[in-house]
Length: 85
Image 1 (spheres, rainbow, N blue to C red):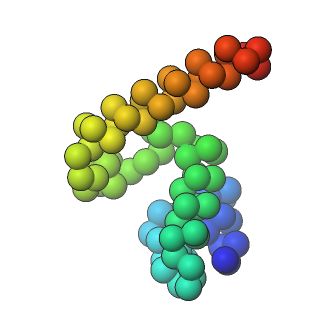
Image 2: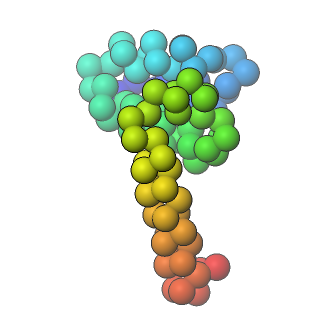
């Protein structure tokens, strides 16, 4: 896996979303590259950084957002119930 998509995430002033997509498509292991890159982007930039055009194209968006919200709440509950919070 190339490190260029990760560089795009950690240096968003220099690299655009289109550059991230371009570099992901260059790698032979696209699924893994996308998973790592998007995971890092989400961790570093948060949900507000997701372009609206990407969200608008998401099938069953309301269901996905609801599931993501419930999963995040569950994770936080688990974190707090195990004394980590």
